[in-house]
Length: 354
Image (cartoon, rainbow, N blue to C red):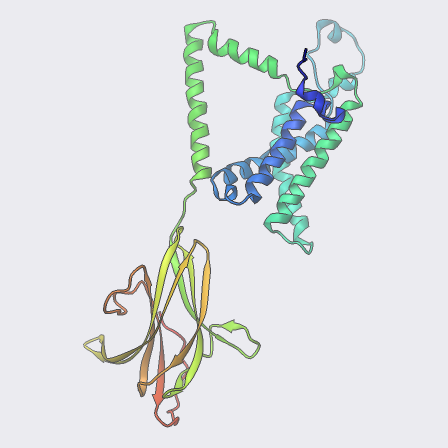
């Protein structure tokens, strides 16, 4: 004959003694760590929803629970008639005050932790922030549990789940009048709409303007990439490097192609006419949102002339059969001189133009 075993008995006694509200806080901390760091899960909208709730409530609730381990009970007429000092049990805070203080202290504690991290070697980064807030919350939860255990059982704070549930069922399903029933329905609809609006705002934030950055850089004497000192004078067949960079801010994965052209152009009727051109190279890449790509382009010119236009055209997706500045998504250009014997005329340096 077998006997059913209560699953709670499989846990250590100290865990079984933990108050239900503090257990819920600990579980929420573990859930937050999971949705932030588990691959795949941290790419879902659940991360934003859980993360927002985490910084707004659990740290403050654990802190208030550590400060006020005692609960409250309604005073009877006999208690009010007694002219005695209030007991420790009567000095606690009620549930509404506890919730309000939890939100307020969370809003104060989280920025304070961030300020402290700013003066540490770890800085304000994802892992230090999550670890610090989680560690603080769990520490306060442990202190709150110890302080409650030291109080007599009838003086400890506990969340009256059953009482709240009974009261809610009575108000919702057993109203005193039809007017109360109508008000309950309106209240329920309002709460659902408010929750849906907040959830939508959190899970589907406004993306803002979508764009792509396209730029040219050169390497200075210290080996750093800077937007300065671009090559201007070439000998035919000589190679000089520049760095081509693209940053994706399109809020989606985007395929890019960059085309480098050397053109002999003239100005006619307030427009630029391409007399001759040489395609130097094409670059292709595919970037996720907020991803950056850079590559070195060694410019090798075979066309000679003064004031030649070295132009870089950026396209999203396919490149037209005849790539031009007019049909490109972005364009950059430099003015260069290419000579056959290396004797280039003096030119004033000019940076890339958009």
